[in-house]
Image 1 (cartoon, rainbow, N blue to C red):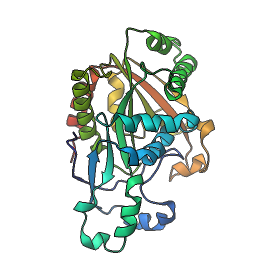
Image 2 (image 1 turned 90 degrees about the vertical axis):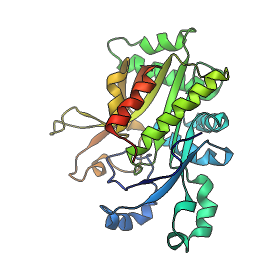
Image 3 (image 1 turned 45 degrees about the vertical axis):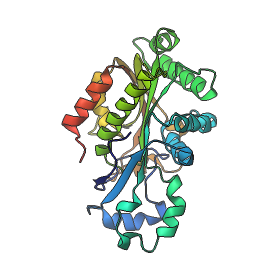
Length: 299
């Protein structure tokens, strides 16, 4: 199913991020991580369809996207993603490709933890179907409410789209650990496009008219040098912003906990945690892949 089976990726310095956004290294290893900044660390990843054992890993990634907005429904949403199986993929470490020297001391522990180690998920769910599910009902409510409050030029635009029975809306979910580089996006989206096309041929409900992407974004507070510029946690999603039919941004700053804003920036600056919703015609998926191919090709 997936064309991204075995890739080597380099470690990157982490950008400012949400408190709930996950890094693939434990916090207690922070000093060790600091010592390795700038070094090339080769890790083999395997992308494959999600299975039941990926539930907890998928749920953790959903938590960093939705924070507390659909907290009670995350389990149902994670189960829905895993149950699709032939549509979407998860990224996990391929231990078969790592050296015996790297794994000799921790092989048993790695085997035990492997089921939870989902480093990324890339999928789409139909939010025009099964609207009786509480997770889909909550997502629809979230999209309508945030659009009403933040899309000043046409507050009801999202509601009109979601309430149009002639439309089929797919929610794109592309989440990963913060230190997984954007090069994983191209093979992930290519694989997803192939999955959708196969599902449509089998008469499954993936024949979308529109796609919605909720992107993790942030903006500097105050009148500093960065002004009002919007930054994207997943760098490739900034490339998609010019392709959408409409978009709006809302704050999730009041839902964050743990780290203070000032810890986001080495210079001591404050950033506000945001979400940017982008709505695309479904045909834009191919153009998004072309853009990734030219701007952020897979390594």
